[in-house]
Image 1 (cartoon, rainbow, N blue to C red):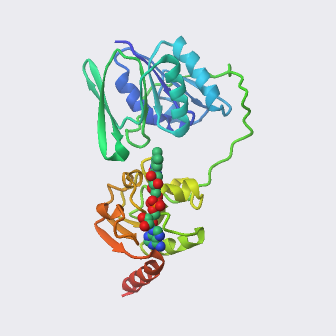
Image 2: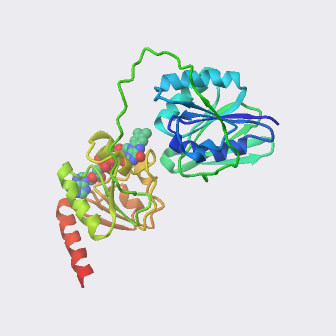
Image 3: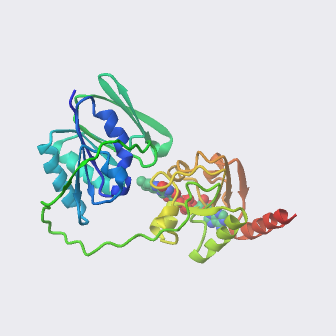
Length: 310
Ligand SMILES: Cc1cc2nc3c(=O)[nH]c(=O)nc-3n(C[C@H](O)[C@H](O)[C@H](O)COP(=O)(O)OP(=O)(O)OC[C@H]3O[C@@H](n4cnc5c(N)ncnc54)[C@H](O)[C@@H]3O)c2cc1C
């Protein structure tokens, strides 16, 4: 059966994350269209039947309007997109326009002959919901990044530039690259997590010292990055950011909210340091220390250093 797929990502660096899914959905005859921003990445260029590029940065409203038109003109059945903040907004806009059911952040997909079964995490990662849909149903789906294999097809895409860009009342005043930490917390063996138990940005040094003696890196709960801006967003651990799987995770001054815990559950050993003996984080910890971090961390770090010297 012919099923045309539209894969969209405003950021071309992650568009490949959705290509694997597009190929499962495609059926025997469908075409896979890509829509993204101009890139020279060959992995992207060789994965589609057609790829449509914008040379400039478009704002979400402009992307949405382009996709609405494209969707109609190309008889799209499935709209697929990597799960990023902007992609989600845009896909939701397009889905609403066509009344498409939207499956957001689908962590698995199974072809079940007449139906497709998607799974997605619910309740902050504590449960999985399965959604079964008829294959004939038109729908949109967003998929998490770094969950599906990146594939490269052997065909060269037909490349087209997006020239008709809708005017909008919103004017973009420019783009700024977000500050990055320079650490890759997803690959680190040891991560020390910083939470709201820290009273000031300067105090983060206490956790940095601990991470350093353990050859590890620091990460943080959402408020530390998103609300206080004390650390870059790429160090934020949890359901809405990085999922980590270190050998050792030390949560310091972190309460253990489900959104944070779902990002650390695959850690081999979890240690929690918290002054509240009833903190939820202790339920998930292999080792728990009930202590004031300001008293405990300097001594802990010093003792580890001394032991490593022996
Ligand atoms: C849609 C949504 C998505 C979210 N996604 C994420 C996510 O991806 N990641 C994430 O982390 N959060 C996320 N959150 C936020 C989450 O719900 C919590 O609000 C957040 O994780 C709490 O961060 P925290 O543990 O640092 O702070 P708090 O909950 O305030 O906990 C601070 C802890 O520090 C302890 N403490 C205080 N002082 C000391 C001290 N001197 N010594 C030792 N311990 C001390 C306290 O006892 C407390 O347990 C999300 C929320 C929503 C609604």
